[in-house]
Amino acid sequence: MTSEPITLAVGSTNASGDQILSFKPEVSNEGISQGKLEVNSSATVTVSFTTCAPPPPASTVLDNKAPVLTVPQDFSREATGRVTVVDFAEQLSAIDREEGNLTDKITCTPVSGSGFAVGATLVTCSVSDSGKRLRTDGSAGPDGEVLTTTASFTVTVEDNTAPDLTVPQGTVSIPAIDINGVSPDYSKWVSAWDLVDEEETPMPVCTPASLPIGLEQTVECTATDSRGNRSDPQSFTVNVTFASASRGLLQPVNDTRNGLPISLFKAGSTIPLKFLPPTFAGGDAATGLAGGLRLVVTTVPASGNSAEEETTDLSSGSTAWRYDLTAGQYVFNLSTKNPFFRAGMGYRAEISFQGVPVARGDFRLK
Ligand SMILES: [Ca+2]
Ligand SMILES: [Ca+2]
Image (tube, rainbow, N blue to C red; front, side, top):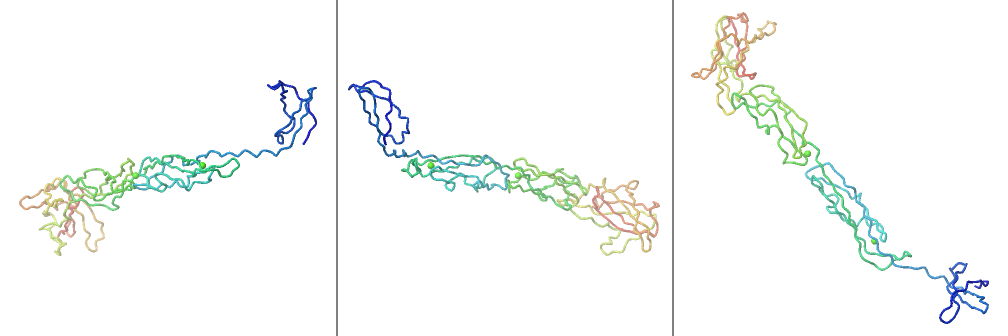
């Protein structure tokens, strides 16, 4: 290519006395790699150019870049057991400029899907590339140093769940150990299970700790795990009874449960009501009950008599109950002079201590 002459400013001279010209062609420099300068006496400069091939683009090897590793934010999970399986693989990713998706090469300690104990656990993940390098033109360059990226997050397993508490559904009967009742070992009837504590779940706490002799007493229990999560209270019913069952009356009142005929007494007479003492859990006879015994006499409708039962408590105003140490029996002399007692009627005598039956017998008046 040639161009029209252009006028250039004259600069200084070099050591040889040549004129040095400095100029910037007002044309694209793409095709200009060299030129030729001629200087004449009148300082007219003629510049001619030859066309050269464009220079090849510069192509250098780029530095390797480390993979970009993405891990979850710190997060929490509710415990599902002594250890809780936590899966976070779906939340991991790694992208490398030179090698693309490296998610499959991520390693974590502990690994996703591990069992995590209650509390905070630091998870550290890392991923390494293969050290590949690229040229600026996108072609593969020589391998460089392998680069590793590390990232951490915290998994916190929390236990906010109270233990499962199990109490009896029906009424529990517990024999008294003495006249004051019993301090039950509730672990025989009550249990708790906590997902995290498992077999180390603390025993439930039940109140009251001790119970008097008596029926239909309410016991309330709660279960608390080792981290202080307390269950809602649950209650059940306890009868504190005697170890021996309710017994029949002794002679002179026939025990009809043994097949004897019903005893017949004259109206207005005094009937001795006697029975053997019940026993406590250890087998000892309960001989100190006299002050708390209660007698209830009920009419038993005779055949053809449709009258409703009547009930009366004759314990007050009658001779007191006493324990006959020699005979080993409780004794109560029942006077039938009271108008409640009438010839021709049948009666049932029921004796209890703090509501717990201890003896029962039937008789008739003539
Ligand atoms: Ca890389
Ligand atoms: Ca728990």
